[in-house]
Length: 378
Image (cartoon, rainbow, N blue to C red; front, side, top):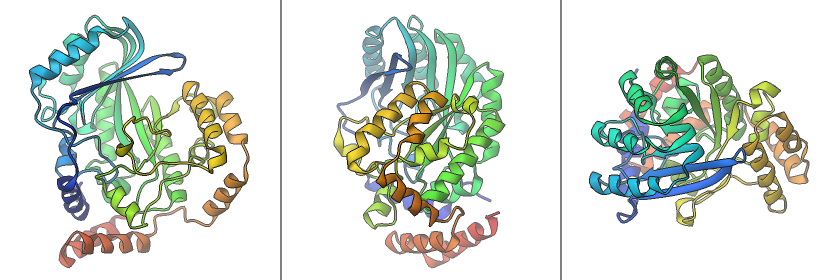
């Protein structure tokens, strides 16, 4: 069975082609914040973007449709920004528009020059984000030899540890076996694995997404992932989520979904489960069209409780979040009880039929893909 869903790939190619590209003049951005009461810095640089995205990629993703940029200009700007970083950082992440270890996006020579720029920048934790299928032992060893860090952390966008959902709801072009192979290579290199797990997966109910997030975290730990980062999805322009949202076929999950997922884990496990992107961190408001939220009168208080958990993941920061009560939360809980915890094929088929009509997917192609989907659901 092909790892890609033919219908979603076709749709996503059209979504990508219609997507507004990034601004050419912005080739690098630096974001700093406080995490665990220590300095965190993220350095982003322009590339042509995620290879998988350009081929018809993930349904929720838009990290940017970039350009073939002047590598010398990018390296020059990176050198200036890295020179101005604090000499000692708790956490430093350096990331392109997609995958740091994808040679098609960041050529090997460029990647080694970037790593070389970091030789004199001390940090406790150094992070890169990359697709599992871009990881090789040689690339990991090159990273370890060049960068001055105590711990190396490889962040992988898993989204959901379920092959059916990865293929037919996210179009991840990845399987759990691919993930396991990558995890094993990372550990052989003496590095650590951070698994990004999503809440708010399209085509399924919010409650179903919550249950699969819990299952995915448990599976990620059993596969050897050292930490998990839980992400509620925002609706970004130029994504299938945006099309579904505009046609009232998708809405962001509630922020109450985060403590609901976390409630399924022990105190020790909570210390290994981080959260991110429950806030919209973009200063450019056009980058997000809809975000996870709760009732307006409690939003800021809930965000502050989530901030506390983000800074200090564990039972002490989770308890106030779990104990917080409001009428809006009660109504959300009642709504969740009415939703299915399982994948509803009728629901999925109805949305696929609408997609096929809107994106000119032939009946033959839809029926062929649906046959695979229907017969591969365990």
